[in-house]
Length: 251
Image (tube, rainbow, N blue to C red; front, top):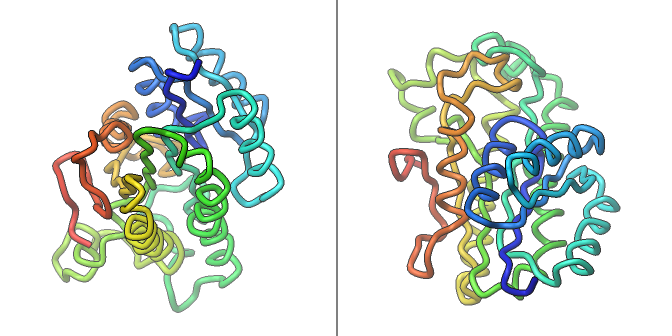
Protein backbone atom coordinates (compact mmCIF):
# COMPACT_ATOMS: atom_id res chain seq x y z
CA UNK A 1 0.00 0.00 0.00
CA UNK A 2 2.97 2.32 0.51
CA UNK A 3 2.92 3.56 -3.09
CA UNK A 4 -0.77 4.36 -2.93
CA UNK A 5 -1.70 8.03 -2.68
CA UNK A 6 -4.15 8.76 0.12
CA UNK A 7 -6.46 11.78 0.26
CA UNK A 8 -8.82 13.03 2.97
CA UNK A 9 -11.69 15.31 2.01
CA UNK A 10 -13.66 16.82 4.91
CA UNK A 11 -17.41 17.40 4.56
CA UNK A 12 -17.42 15.09 1.56
CA UNK A 13 -20.66 13.14 1.80
CA UNK A 14 -22.29 15.59 -0.64
CA UNK A 15 -21.70 18.64 -2.79
CA UNK A 16 -18.29 19.86 -3.92
CA UNK A 17 -16.45 17.67 -1.41
CA UNK A 18 -18.06 14.56 -2.81
CA UNK A 19 -17.30 15.73 -6.34
CA UNK A 20 -13.62 16.15 -5.43
CA UNK A 21 -13.56 12.72 -3.75
CA UNK A 22 -14.99 11.15 -6.91
CA UNK A 23 -12.42 12.83 -9.17
CA UNK A 24 -9.46 11.93 -6.93
CA UNK A 25 -10.67 8.32 -6.77
CA UNK A 26 -10.92 8.29 -10.57
CA UNK A 27 -7.22 9.26 -10.64
CA UNK A 28 -6.42 6.17 -8.61
CA UNK A 29 -6.10 7.67 -5.16
CA UNK A 30 -7.45 6.05 -2.01
CA UNK A 31 -9.97 8.62 -0.79
CA UNK A 32 -11.31 9.07 2.71
CA UNK A 33 -14.64 10.86 2.92
CA UNK A 34 -14.96 12.82 6.15
CA UNK A 35 -18.57 13.23 7.28
CA UNK A 36 -20.18 14.21 10.58
CA UNK A 37 -22.97 11.71 9.97
CA UNK A 38 -21.44 8.23 9.72
CA UNK A 39 -24.39 6.80 7.76
CA UNK A 40 -24.32 9.55 5.14
CA UNK A 41 -20.57 9.22 4.83
CA UNK A 42 -20.86 5.47 4.35
CA UNK A 43 -23.61 5.86 1.73
CA UNK A 44 -21.47 8.30 -0.26
CA UNK A 45 -18.40 6.05 0.02
CA UNK A 46 -20.41 3.00 -1.06
CA UNK A 47 -21.73 4.84 -4.12
CA UNK A 48 -18.21 5.87 -5.15
CA UNK A 49 -16.89 2.35 -4.53
CA UNK A 50 -19.67 1.01 -6.78
CA UNK A 51 -18.27 3.28 -9.50
CA UNK A 52 -14.86 1.64 -9.05
CA UNK A 53 -13.18 3.98 -6.56
CA UNK A 54 -11.14 2.99 -3.50
CA UNK A 55 -13.22 5.18 -1.18
CA UNK A 56 -13.85 4.86 2.55
CA UNK A 57 -15.86 6.88 5.04
CA UNK A 58 -14.48 8.30 8.30
CA UNK A 59 -16.57 9.99 10.96
CA UNK A 60 -15.19 13.49 11.29
CA UNK A 61 -16.62 16.66 12.81
CA UNK A 62 -14.09 19.46 12.35
CA UNK A 63 -15.45 21.22 15.46
CA UNK A 64 -14.85 18.12 17.61
CA UNK A 65 -11.11 17.58 18.17
CA UNK A 66 -11.70 14.05 19.51
CA UNK A 67 -13.12 12.89 16.14
CA UNK A 68 -10.25 14.62 14.35
CA UNK A 69 -7.63 12.85 16.50
CA UNK A 70 -9.39 9.53 15.93
CA UNK A 71 -9.31 9.97 12.14
CA UNK A 72 -5.60 10.86 12.29
CA UNK A 73 -5.04 7.68 14.31
CA UNK A 74 -6.97 5.57 11.79
CA UNK A 75 -5.01 6.99 8.84
CA UNK A 76 -1.72 6.43 10.67
CA UNK A 77 -2.65 2.85 11.46
CA UNK A 78 -4.01 1.95 8.06
CA UNK A 79 -1.81 3.90 5.64
CA UNK A 80 1.03 5.47 7.64
CA UNK A 81 0.86 8.72 5.69
CA UNK A 82 -1.44 11.22 3.97
CA UNK A 83 -0.77 12.85 0.60
CA UNK A 84 -3.71 15.21 0.15
CA UNK A 85 -5.86 17.12 2.63
CA UNK A 86 -8.84 19.03 1.27
CA UNK A 87 -10.39 21.18 3.98
CA UNK A 88 -13.82 21.35 2.40
CA UNK A 89 -16.21 21.18 5.38
CA UNK A 90 -17.91 24.54 5.76
CA UNK A 91 -21.17 26.17 6.72
CA UNK A 92 -22.82 29.37 5.54
CA UNK A 93 -24.50 30.07 8.87
CA UNK A 94 -27.77 30.89 7.13
CA UNK A 95 -28.73 27.30 6.39
CA UNK A 96 -30.14 26.22 3.08
CA UNK A 97 -31.03 29.56 1.50
CA UNK A 98 -30.09 31.27 -1.71
CA UNK A 99 -27.24 33.79 -1.05
CA UNK A 100 -29.43 36.75 -1.97
CA UNK A 101 -31.82 35.74 0.83
CA UNK A 102 -29.14 35.54 3.55
CA UNK A 103 -30.30 38.70 5.29
CA UNK A 104 -29.35 37.26 8.68
CA UNK A 105 -25.70 37.89 7.69
CA UNK A 106 -26.06 41.69 7.49
CA UNK A 107 -23.37 43.15 9.79
CA UNK A 108 -25.45 45.66 11.76
CA UNK A 109 -28.07 43.11 12.75
CA UNK A 110 -26.13 39.84 12.75
CA UNK A 111 -26.35 37.46 15.71
CA UNK A 112 -22.77 37.25 16.93
CA UNK A 113 -23.31 33.64 18.02
CA UNK A 114 -24.00 32.76 14.40
CA UNK A 115 -20.72 34.43 13.41
CA UNK A 116 -18.93 32.39 16.10
CA UNK A 117 -20.47 29.15 14.82
CA UNK A 118 -19.41 29.89 11.23
CA UNK A 119 -15.83 30.69 12.26
CA UNK A 120 -15.77 27.58 14.45
CA UNK A 121 -16.28 25.37 11.39
CA UNK A 122 -14.79 27.43 8.56
CA UNK A 123 -11.65 28.71 10.31
CA UNK A 124 -10.91 27.02 13.64
CA UNK A 125 -11.97 23.62 12.28
CA UNK A 126 -9.42 23.96 9.48
CA UNK A 127 -6.65 24.65 12.01
CA UNK A 128 -7.70 21.65 14.11
CA UNK A 129 -7.78 19.25 11.16
CA UNK A 130 -4.64 20.57 9.47
CA UNK A 131 -2.53 20.43 12.64
CA UNK A 132 -3.72 16.92 13.49
CA UNK A 133 -2.81 15.64 10.02
CA UNK A 134 0.43 17.52 9.38
CA UNK A 135 2.61 14.75 10.86
CA UNK A 136 1.09 12.33 8.32
CA UNK A 137 1.36 14.83 5.45
CA UNK A 138 5.06 15.31 6.22
CA UNK A 139 5.57 11.61 5.38
CA UNK A 140 4.30 12.13 1.84
CA UNK A 141 6.74 12.77 -1.01
CA UNK A 142 4.35 15.41 -2.43
CA UNK A 143 1.96 16.72 0.25
CA UNK A 144 -0.81 19.07 -0.82
CA UNK A 145 -3.32 21.03 1.27
CA UNK A 146 -6.34 22.67 -0.36
CA UNK A 147 -8.56 24.99 1.66
CA UNK A 148 -11.96 25.44 0.05
CA UNK A 149 -12.67 29.14 0.01
CA UNK A 150 -15.10 31.16 -2.09
CA UNK A 151 -15.21 34.18 -4.36
CA UNK A 152 -17.14 35.70 -1.44
CA UNK A 153 -13.81 35.79 0.44
CA UNK A 154 -12.28 38.26 -2.01
CA UNK A 155 -11.88 41.71 -0.48
CA UNK A 156 -11.05 42.96 -3.96
CA UNK A 157 -14.34 41.74 -5.41
CA UNK A 158 -16.38 42.67 -2.34
CA UNK A 159 -15.02 46.22 -2.05
CA UNK A 160 -15.77 47.12 -5.65
CA UNK A 161 -18.95 49.25 -5.66
CA UNK A 162 -20.07 47.82 -9.00
CA UNK A 163 -18.56 44.38 -8.48
CA UNK A 164 -20.26 41.01 -8.73
CA UNK A 165 -20.90 40.82 -4.97
CA UNK A 166 -23.08 43.94 -4.76
CA UNK A 167 -26.12 41.87 -5.76
CA UNK A 168 -25.86 39.99 -2.44
CA UNK A 169 -26.61 41.22 1.08
CA UNK A 170 -23.44 42.18 2.99
CA UNK A 171 -22.14 39.32 5.15
CA UNK A 172 -20.60 39.50 8.62
CA UNK A 173 -20.27 35.71 8.96
CA UNK A 174 -19.69 33.59 5.87
CA UNK A 175 -17.67 36.00 3.70
CA UNK A 176 -15.33 37.16 6.50
CA UNK A 177 -14.83 33.55 7.62
CA UNK A 178 -13.60 32.69 4.13
CA UNK A 179 -11.42 35.83 4.03
CA UNK A 180 -9.89 34.64 7.30
CA UNK A 181 -9.41 31.18 5.75
CA UNK A 182 -7.53 32.80 2.86
CA UNK A 183 -5.29 34.65 5.31
CA UNK A 184 -4.68 31.40 7.18
CA UNK A 185 -3.85 29.63 3.91
CA UNK A 186 -1.06 32.12 3.23
CA UNK A 187 0.38 31.74 6.74
CA UNK A 188 0.39 27.93 6.56
CA UNK A 189 1.92 28.10 3.08
CA UNK A 190 4.71 30.34 4.35
CA UNK A 191 5.45 28.07 7.30
CA UNK A 192 5.39 24.85 5.25
CA UNK A 193 7.04 26.12 2.06
CA UNK A 194 10.48 24.87 3.17
CA UNK A 195 9.00 21.38 3.68
CA UNK A 196 7.65 21.17 0.13
CA UNK A 197 4.02 21.24 1.32
CA UNK A 198 1.95 23.28 -1.13
CA UNK A 199 -1.01 25.06 0.47
CA UNK A 200 -3.59 26.90 -1.62
CA UNK A 201 -7.14 28.26 -1.40
CA UNK A 202 -9.73 27.24 -3.99
CA UNK A 203 -12.77 29.21 -5.10
CA UNK A 204 -15.06 26.65 -6.77
CA UNK A 205 -17.49 29.23 -8.12
CA UNK A 206 -21.28 29.31 -7.80
CA UNK A 207 -22.02 25.59 -7.73
CA UNK A 208 -25.46 23.99 -7.49
CA UNK A 209 -25.41 22.62 -3.88
CA UNK A 210 -27.56 22.43 -0.76
CA UNK A 211 -25.68 25.33 0.81
CA UNK A 212 -27.10 27.83 -1.68
CA UNK A 213 -30.45 26.03 -2.00
CA UNK A 214 -29.44 24.79 -5.46
CA UNK A 215 -29.35 28.28 -7.02
CA UNK A 216 -25.80 27.79 -8.38
CA UNK A 217 -25.24 27.37 -12.11
CA UNK A 218 -22.07 25.23 -12.09
CA UNK A 219 -22.18 21.48 -11.68
CA UNK A 220 -20.50 19.84 -8.71
CA UNK A 221 -17.94 18.32 -11.10
CA UNK A 222 -17.09 21.76 -12.50
CA UNK A 223 -16.74 23.22 -9.00
CA UNK A 224 -14.60 20.35 -7.77
CA UNK A 225 -12.16 20.56 -10.68
CA UNK A 226 -10.13 23.43 -9.19
CA UNK A 227 -9.85 21.56 -5.86
CA UNK A 228 -8.50 18.51 -7.67
CA UNK A 229 -6.08 20.58 -9.74
CA UNK A 230 -4.60 22.13 -6.58
CA UNK A 231 -4.56 18.73 -4.84
CA UNK A 232 -2.46 17.22 -7.63
CA UNK A 233 0.01 20.04 -8.35
CA UNK A 234 3.51 19.11 -9.41
CA UNK A 235 6.55 20.05 -7.32
CA UNK A 236 6.86 23.33 -9.24
CA UNK A 237 3.24 24.26 -8.49
CA UNK A 238 2.19 27.42 -6.67
CA UNK A 239 1.72 27.80 -2.94
CA UNK A 240 0.05 30.60 -0.93
CA UNK A 241 -2.33 31.16 -3.86
CA UNK A 242 -6.07 31.74 -4.27
CA UNK A 243 -7.46 30.20 -7.44
CA UNK A 244 -10.73 29.75 -9.28
CA UNK A 245 -11.43 27.79 -12.45
CA UNK A 246 -9.98 30.60 -14.59
CA UNK A 247 -6.81 31.16 -12.54
CA UNK A 248 -5.89 33.50 -9.66
CA UNK A 249 -8.71 35.32 -7.85
CA UNK A 250 -7.97 38.80 -6.43
CA UNK A 251 -7.38 38.73 -2.67
